[in-house]
Image 1 (cartoon, rainbow, N blue to C red):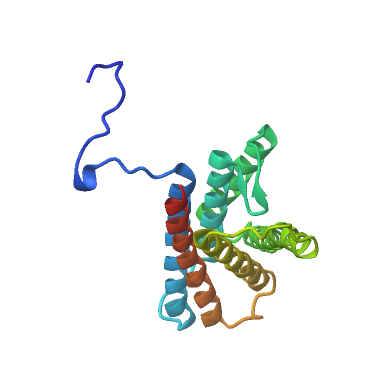
Image 2 (image 1 turned 60 degrees about the vertical axis):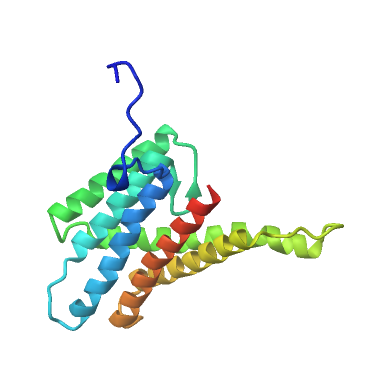
Length: 205
């Protein structure tokens, strides 16, 4: 290969190029984070290991900022990567990093922010998804449109993710409302659903 030629795409086994879209690749670490967080919350609730809420909240905010900066993906939907969205993403990243390094100062602010974003995002995306369905039920087409099974799985997975997001936001907004073990289960389910979503998106693409 010359210095001006395209990068090599060969290789075998683990050295083979991974044809993984950026949007899907960013979802994977979020899923890993949520599954690991949920599993760690079990011994945390049993009092066997210490827990850093600032680190948890800060890391969640940083990952959210990366999604905004790289894809324009926000909890309330995907938007064009305007300069306003870039500025918001940088601000979120700065808050998350600061929370990880200096605990106890931004905890309440970030917790409230994440709670509102999760609840609002889940509710908005559910509304956007089901309003057209209700319109279709009230005004059915002349010929019924067959929905592919894979698309049905995608819609079902996204719907459950939105409901879990709302539930997670409520538990952050009202601490103590739900037992800690239940929260751990919700977080693990959220992470597992993200991997289900990734597998469906890879089959569709």
